[in-house]
Image (cartoon, rainbow, N blue to C red):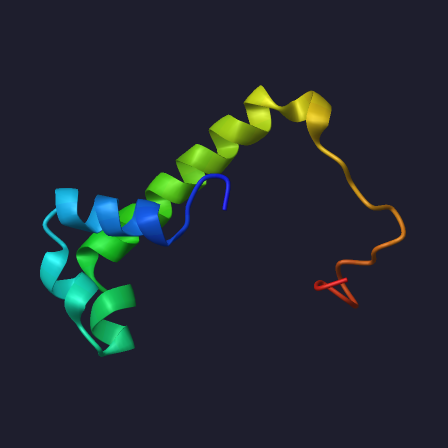
Length: 72
């Protein structure tokens, strides 16, 4: 992934006190943790920054109807 991914998430969790949540087998513990919420916010910032920086390279597929088939 361009702005996220497993390696990025692991590093963020470790640097932000989320090691226990990262090691948890319980999805609610891992993905519902405070550090997970912070990581989601960080991903939004990264994605927005990337979209702004590479706006000329953004390719939209006009034949894809995201409302009826979001995974086209």
